[in-house]
Figure 1 (tube, rainbow, N blue to C red):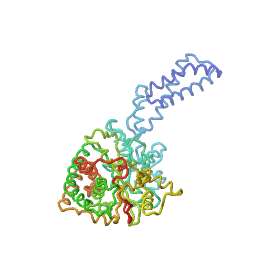
Figure 2 (figure 1 turned 120 degrees about the horizontal axis):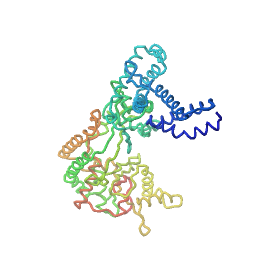
Figure 3 (figure 1 turned 90 degrees about the horizontal axis):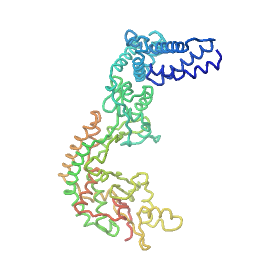
Figure 4 (figure 1 turned 180 degrees about the horizontal axis):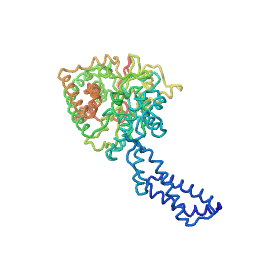
Length: 541
């Protein structure tokens, strides 16, 4: 037959051929493959035959034969039972769609297996290698190959027997942030380095609440094991996953997942204990500061209210820190290949809706205490919270501004052209205010060192120390329900000295504001509230 005639026949029957293929195969990709094979065989046959009678029957016969051959090719993948067969299939079109579904499911289950299991299956069933030949190839004993083969078949059977809706929904979480308690690596590596990929985050979450094998993780994440084996190896090498009994993996980091119930419970507890601090400790601070020596403590415009905002925040963060929390946490630090020693943690939000809480969470979000300077005679402290207007980004606080402010106070820099940018930054952040051509320093400045100033502040009573212990226990009892058993010890260490936490400090400020013991701040004051510069020289008033 001439090429032009064959082309015309193919053009006429192409839609019917695809209809034939798609009626027998639900998987669109496979249907297209079958159709392509039919077209190829029909076209080749047309070119080699001069005249064909009953073209419909002719093309249907070729199509049926191509499909039957396709089913035979695919059926070999199903030869994986103890008798080398899981199920039996006749080469009839009535069973094709059912077969296709089973085959697709089998391919998925095979992909979940570990590398060694996949290799053994491939060589034994698809390359017809003997146990001895496989053993030589993998440099193991035939008995070991037989064990892997048996184990792989068992896992496949278990997977194939599961109903689709019995399989855990694919996990697709994303860390909202990560961090670490302890040191960074010498190469500048940190938790971000290892959890920049979503797959690493999902692996860690999958193996967090219970130990899992690679196959179990792969099945849960609905990805082929080959895509996660290397990631798992990296996480194990660097201490973020532990390999435990049964070739299983268990996540070795804290993953914090918000819970409305837990947050509501903790809010009630925090509020209760913040009131204890307001009643027992804060009055001592007010009494002490009312008798302060003005030669040792500078306050802008001599504003006592502004002073107490900073003193309360500072004292509650440091004087109420009764234990060395870092010492408790240090015993849980993991030594990593990059030279770091730390506890890694991450938090995620999933579909959590903060607006469902009965309270306004933003009131208690903070950027923790930031210190700068290494010189004991000059040092800065800052506590960023809802009540200031500063950007909550730790990268903004390099300490340069505080160095320049100290140099301004001591006269080491003045308003000359080469210092214009340095002064511009101080004015922009309102650490320095100019009114009617007169500058004044817009923050609390203390001449004693930070250590000496802490010693000046009231000590914590025995009653408050006992209250602190009770708070730690209450918060741990709430928190431990959210964490797996192997994280409880770290969780308990983490919940040490909660009385000094930002959760309590922010609620102390909130309560004092409600009670009228602290008053609203001006816009200028919001720029530098909860900031103390420890300087051996005070600003001129």
